[in-house]
Amino acid sequence: MLIDTHIHLDAAEFDGDRDAVMAAARAAGVARFVVPAVEVANFDRVAALSATHADIVHAFGIHPLYVGGARKEDLDVLQERLAQGRAVAVGEIGLDFFGPEFDRITQELYFVEQLKLARRFGLPVVLHVRRAVDDILKHLRRIEVPGGIAHAFNGSRQQADAFIALGFRLGFGGAMTFEGSRRIRSLAATLPMDAIVLETDAPDIPPAWAQGGRNEPADLRRFAEVLAGLRGASPAEIAEATGRNACAVFPALASG
Picture 1 (tube, helix red, strand yellow):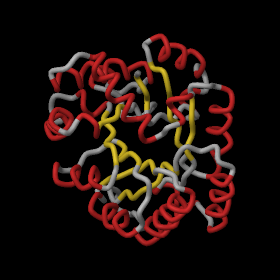
Picture 2 (cartoon, one colour):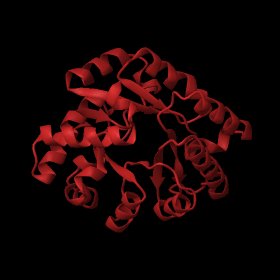
Picture 3 (cartoon, helix red, strand yellow):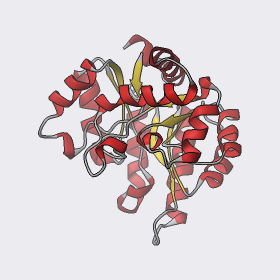
C-alpha cells in the first residue's frame, strides 16, 4: 500500500483545506500517513491528528532548525510524551549544517539526547539530514537505536549503505522527480528495494510538476510511478514494496 512516511499535515499551509487535501490523497490511494513533530509547541497538533484519523500516526521530536528556540525542559516534555506510548518514533530530529549561522553545539546536544531517548524507549528515529550525513552516522554508531528513516536522503551510495547497515530505510520524494537530480535518481534506481520508502514532506519539497507551489500528499502516487519508471517495475509493485518497508519501520502502520 502507498504510505507517506513523512508529511507535515499539521502545517499552517493546510489550515484552509486540510480535510480536502487528505480526501484527495486517500482517493489517490494513499493509505497511511506519518506526521512528525518539529518542536514541543506542535506536539498537541500532531497527536490530535492521529487521535482523530485512523490512518495517521505521529512522532515526537525537536527538529534541528528549532533547537535555537528550545529549552532544556523541552527534553523532559518529550520524554513524558514518549512514555505515554502513542508515538511511533522520535522525530523529526537530526542535524542541519546548511545555513551560514547554524549552531553545531546546540544541534548536536539535542540530537544526542533525543537518540538516547529513542534507545531508552526502543523507538526508531525520523532523521533530518542536511550537510551532516557523516556527523549523523558517527552519532548513530555510538548510540544504537532501532533503525528508522533518513528522510529526503541526498548522500552518496557509500553513505546510503552505511545507513542501511545500521537498519535504516531511506526516504525518496519530490526531489526524485527532477531529471537533473541525477544522484538521487541513481540511488532510487539502484539501492536494494527493501531500503526505500516514499514520502512527500508536504507542504515542502514540491515535485517537478508543482515548482513554486505546495506539495500535496496526493502526489505520492505519482512519486511511486516515477520510482517505478526508474527501477523498471510496476507502480503496484513499488507501492507494495515501499509500504512493506514502511510497516517494518513503524509496525503500527500495518494495523492502523
